Amino acid sequence: MSFKRLATCLAAAAVMLTMLAVTFAQDLDGVEVDFMAGVVRVTGQGVGKGAYKDNPGKFRLTASKAARMDAQAKLVEYIGVQVETNASMTDYEIDTYQVKTSAQGIIRNAKEIGSPQYDPTDDTCTVIMEMNLYGGKGSVAEVAYLPFKDEPKVAFPAPTTKVAKSGANYTGLVIDCRGMNLNPVMSPVIKNANGQAIYGHKNLDYDKIIVNGMASYAGDAYDQISRDRAGNNPIVVKATRLDDINANPVVSVADADKILSANQIDKFLENCAVVFLK
Image (cartoon, rainbow, N blue to C red; front, side, top):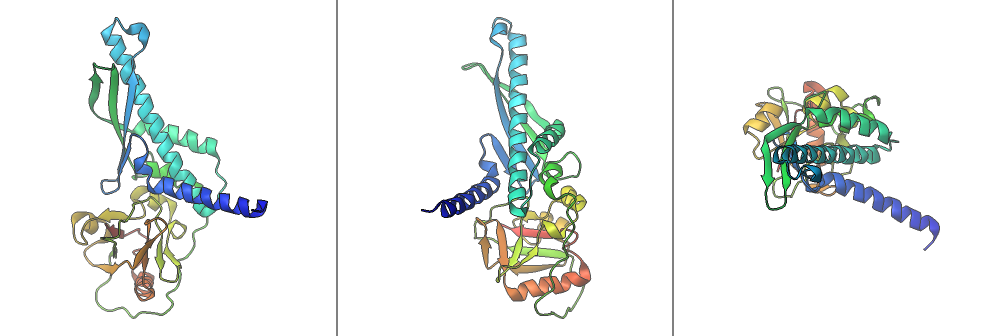
């Protein structure tokens, strides 16, 4: 194999591994991501300082501190995975120091869930911490979308065929991906059957994304999660398939044209009024 071909294969493998990392970031050790609730939970573990073995109070105190530090380190790792993946998808050069510093700055907003749990059999302490994925400043999204904070916004594409609108204004978009093993991610893309992206972070304002996220994940088109995001009169379409490791829904060209035509009037995509059913 030539060096050039080897380099190409390695580069492709690196991109694939990065995409896998973000798609299955919830599988990182001690990290659980609940996209429906909009939170990431981490489990940290630690052991007390041996010097305090004969002082149970101080031993437990140092064990819980170590467990919190472990949980915070996992939060930084999760945020870093999100940022690196977003970067690879948009060809950005990432200032890793800036990312790490920013992540360390926001993890102070993580909340401890319940009380520290101590295991007398191995002297370990376990803590669970939770942090909002979205919500503006102090959320995971604030750092995860950092690579394209200042990038120029790209207009939504025009429909290939204009679809006349009838009836009341549309309040949002619901794409039914049920039965397809959809993998939630922080930066999804909606494509038409020709592979054209009709919705992605490049079309959206950074400030809106970090407050609300790009989409919600729900179980039904008319449950509370869907209504809160897409309103009472959404366009509801069925995904034809999923791309990019089951992360990005693909819709028919006809449905894409319907969505883009309606959005030219109702602007629901600009407001991130998008729901994926899973």
